[in-house]
Image (cartoon, rainbow over all chains, first blue to last red; front, side, top):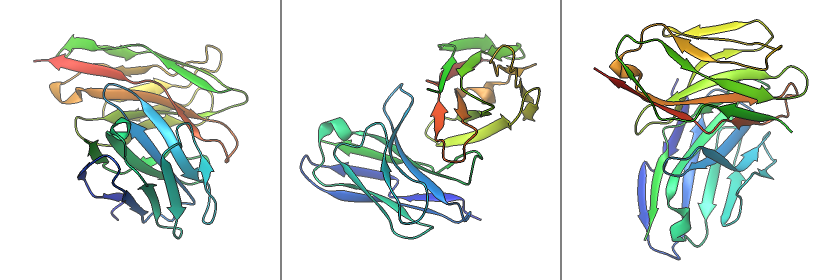
Length: 111
Length: 113
């Protein structure tokens, strides 16, 4: 039981490049989330998916798109990376009103 | 709307000291309450939780009691270790299953040997 997995672990992009961060969970959870965490700061919700086939904006959605590919997988895409998107990105999943379970994170640097 | 307020860090203690990290919340109804821990370079891990008033969550020597009357969920540990150095996040989820988790800003804890 791997829980929540994320790929890649590290990524360096140049301004304007695009990339997709992958997330998968094997806990059969309906809800999945993408957060960003900037140095010394808390978590900010980018997008979430309450169930397969639905996605909604969170607190900081600009510059990102998401796809809920199936119940297991929820990807985050940066179409044109900017230095302001340098951050650590966490994926999480949950079921109902229970706790969220987090992946190990993707450390992204945009130069 | 729902919100969580936790004490600002950093908090620095000596090994074997008593730890309290304060957390208060604002919410309608009876939210579920959580403490998460984030070790350096890692993701957040659920530390403990409580889902109704007067419940006590506990794990790894840490405890927190859901106090409806004071809208608080303070984290305590009787004797901290160097390995407890991490950032601790208080969080709540509203009673509706559609509610998203609201996180506090985090408290960095450093333990001196």
